[in-house]
Image 1 (spheres, protein in one colour):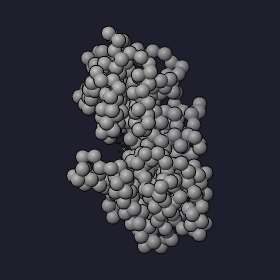
Image 2 (cartoon, protein in one colour):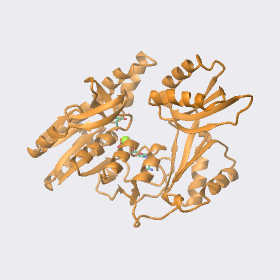
Image 3 (cartoon, helix red, strand yellow):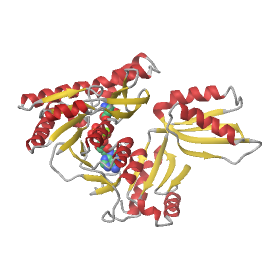
Image 4 (cartoon, helix red, strand yellow):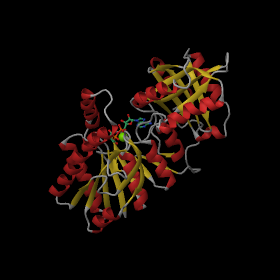
Length: 400
Ligand code: ADP
Ligand code: ASP
Ligand code: MG
């Protein structure tokens, strides 16, 4: 059997931790499995690298950022491989490119297009432990690309999809909780969660798994197991929904302060204009969410949406260029907002969840700026200062 294991930044954050990871990987190899290990950059390395670039420039070129950020993972793959060799296991480290990871899309948010898996397979056949750099690949121009923050998860699940094997994500938390335990320490751990719910929770702020990783997992039916990196302890399975899963209306709650809210005031009322605005954002691959629009007044509407804070520079550029066409528009950006979402497949069959959450927010005097719903989630944009109160009230009511 082949297994892909992924160890996150905290789990490889020091030489001692790398030794611990090497021991766990070796144990797995001893069981007779072919082992591919994906690792992230050590500790906060990626943040530090970005920090250095920002000391030189407010808006560094994204190609250069990719070149810079990808070095973090190269440090950890080589160190882990050295640690494995040292304890008597044949191992080889590979960059994303060497592992055949082909990407396309935009710099700093590349998408895996395909993986030429032959090299990885060859080394596995030779009995080697293959250590692959997470978070990176190469595009058609031969440029290094990174896959967006948290992208090592994506590397791991995509490799598992290609190798048709299971993917184990080892991290600093012992599984998936109903709410980020850092935000709400008494949250409950889930034995399993559906791809669909995990994808919503991840995209709405549950940083324990990268959204695209879960998406690839679902598409290729890769069983994903999330567990602690430094201890044997039961974790959480992410898999297709089935009847054995806990049937609660709400499975989890996510909160994210990684987005800002953009409001464009005075857009001439015409659906073609709105389409132009969002077309311009889509062209630059801006991940827009929570779209809302006011009723027309004097032939104008105000349009709001949320988007990642990391794309603020691109959004401002787009808004500036839209002024050529709509000279009256004014852009307002709110940064102190939190996107709060409740997620659950149970919502499909149970009505009244929206009414209940409105009631909870009203009782606690928490205002919201926007609300959007899908079949299995309800999201609110609230002031960041209200987050803890809102999380506690909703968790209490839904027993999370
Ligand atoms: P890694 O470096 O291993 O990739 P991350 O920091 O990306 O680790 O993800 C692990 C963190 O995700 C945990 O420390 C936890 O605070 C956070 N997290 C957010 N939401 C959840 C959740 N619903 N369940 C568990 N952990 C969560
Ligand atoms: N090192 C990258 C990051 O910090 C990728 C990852 O950790 O998954 O975002
Ligand atoms: Mg992560």
